[in-house]
Length: 504
Ligand SMILES: Cc1cc2nc3c(=O)[nH]c(=O)nc-3n(C[C@H](O)[C@H](O)[C@H](O)COP(=O)(O)OP(=O)(O)OC[C@H]3O[C@@H](n4cnc5c(N)ncnc54)[C@H](O)[C@@H]3O)c2cc1C
Image 1 (tube, protein in one colour):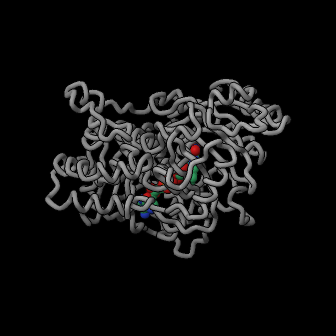
Image 2: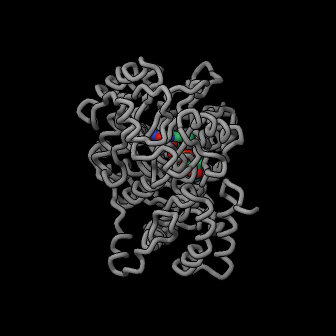
Image 3: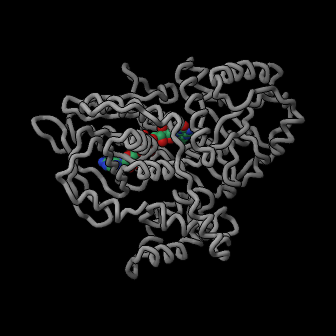
């Protein structure tokens, strides 16, 4: 997957794409895979890096959403559980099964939660990934040695999927390219072309060179997440707001703050939010929050009150709770929630289902949903686009479509044993991982490599600062960049980090 090769396909602006997708997060990339694998000529343009928005900032669960059962959203949970099962079959190298426990500190809690989880098991049907059951306090403490012991009555254990969101995004981009799509990062759509009142193309700027491109398409789909309203206004300047962004943050601490391989889920904290403590890449993710009324932005930052909230609530469930100084990294993401018809101030209550809109000029907007349901969302969007644009009908094939395996790092390490060495003792990546990402996964910036091809920046900010100059120099050499480029990249990357520089 080489950007310099793919971008040449834009040189001929007279060719007409069947489907142009604006936005390279979970939704847009899913659409590109779906459309290309049906045989449609597909172009995807992402203004930043693939998954640089919300899609690299999730809780990293492929799940039905236990808490949506509480809201009575049975259909959404059932559909999500089906998608969970399919994705585990289609990308076993990217999604694995994670045991999670809902702890109980009153006698009635383990059986009560267990009943809800039996319904969860049932809804998964033949795509289930393991039955839920009650666990006694001793078993629970073996699984989570740092769980609060006093008055612990046991818990209800169930299974969901866990993944690396940005890595899945890259696998989708590569799969789309394998099926013939042209997918490009760092190319932002700045205007829509219209003929007789109908959208017929896009104008985009390459953020790496400043060059402008035009492309014509039979169907244009906006999958721009929290930026959907801005994209709709390129079409209809007076379009009313559709999206109510809600911020959620995660703190990353040493995994010993829970211990073991099992995740913790507290279904309702004081204010009705869900609290997760999840082992991931040898760290523990503590999340999340639900802060409404935030403005759309690509790099949201955790708010002070969100950090305090998570630390306070984690302390209620952990024997030795993490302190501020234990935070190794923190990240925020914006949920692209679609506003309910009558409007509601409470984003935790807004459905996580997706919405498709068709404007008078033919622009298709898809928004809402979640990572877990990206495939189903893509199927709906492409079905819609094919009808609107009168494309020759072609069935969706993604239910059983295997996603691309990312195996170049292994071959590199086999060929040169020195590349097996880790890039930093605190980070789970080898030199081969970094080199393979630079050569085969289309990163254009240091942040692309350290935040999304590897997850260094959200695993350990201090360690990432240490390796940044070396990785930037390697990128400059591999990509043939001029002197000074590496230094600029390091500055830009460290500006995006969340925690203050140690000793600053
Ligand atoms: C805190 C949090 C936790 C979550 N946890 C989970 C979870 O555990 N499991 C789950 O299933 N879901 C989870 N979600 C939901 C999931 O992450 C999102 O639903 C999903 O990532 C949204 O993807 P998207 O592609 O619609 O949006 P985005 O990822 O935001 O992608 C939209 C893209 O469009 C691009 N774009 C915008 N304007 C333009 C333009 N003019 N030209 C080109 N590109 C443009 C943006 O740069 C962006 O990359 C979570 C969300 C949050 C915030």
